[in-house]
Image (cartoon, rainbow, N blue to C red; front, side, top):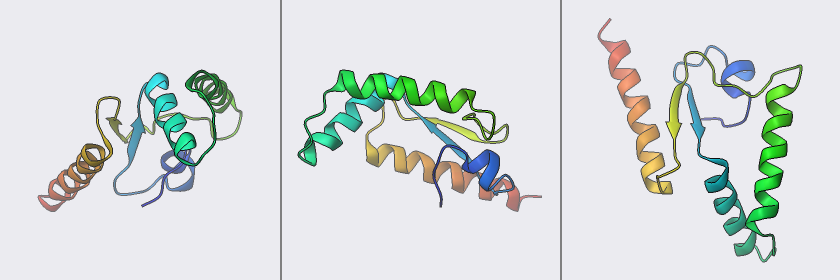
Length: 104
């Protein structure tokens, strides 16, 4: 398994299963700020949110390998999922994809 902003479109375009994981910028900022705070880094959600908006805009508009969902990727919105539910949802996508290929 690999993750990154261009894995499904550039690095592994022929992967058997692609999952485009997302969440709202606000939830992503809350999660990242909590990670920073757990590491002892006092960075607020507002600062992280501004960084997320800037990074997303920059990555979506770059000339080479822009951030976008691969056409054949499964969308996994984790906005309302905790880590365990998100992992379970990803596993379910992979298992369903494998089962579907096995019926050929």
